[in-house]
Image 1 (tube, rainbow, N blue to C red):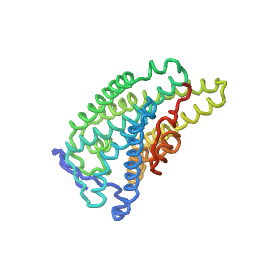
Image 2 (cartoon, helix red, strand yellow):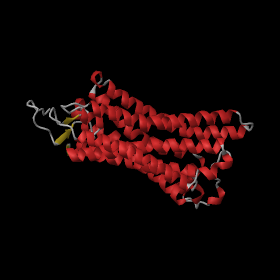
Image 3 (tube, rainbow, N blue to C red):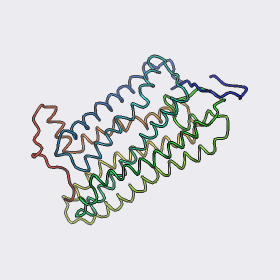
Image 4 (tube, rainbow, N blue to C red):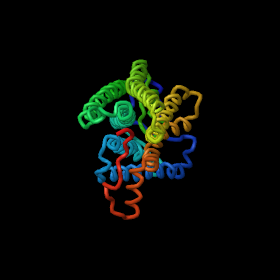
Length: 326
């Protein structure tokens, strides 16, 4: 490890050391992560193609699935290429500027998933609890306004985090025990006061993930109260199935986020290899899991994919768009 004993110099170039305890097995570590990347790229590309080309899927719910597929396709691109270069070719250097740019996009794209999951919950809430006003509330104008507002929120908070991280002096070490520039990993290399960075990081978690999760919980509590009061058993079953798909995705995403957050808080009592693995799973696993769960559990998408694989011509009129209460 390169360390600066004097402490009067700030490093501007860094070296990634991922899985330091398994450095001799790097070529083998590459294989499972490459397969995850491949599943993410192929799976999300198929979901995007099917929803884009089939007019019967041009409704708000599928628009949000389309959006989350784009996010899941973009997220691995921010860090996986560097990771593969590190594992296969041992190219593991990055400048401070490059590190900050990567940090910004990794966290910004990750926040998009939280935003879309929250909007999915709102969409199902309106569809089930106020179906007569669904078309008034859930339309392209509403989605654009909400998207812009939430993107500004996330962009401003993450920009402040990156700017504060860039103002630090990194005189302790230039070794990043990870495959990408994570905020707390980089801040941990600073030799100055980092209290404001920690506070800003917690504020961003609360304002982005915390607020989105509160909205999701509120929406689904009301949804299940409305579903339990439904007189129609068929409508109840359909609502539970559709919401169940979203809940599976939400639970996986937020559970991995919680594990990643806790890993940072107890990192001193945890192996760096375990810490790195949890962080990578938080970033990569939802990207390859989501297209599978939506492709398997969403009937309309599944039928279009099967017909596409079999080479049959798809007639949009033959497949009804999923709608719970309309």
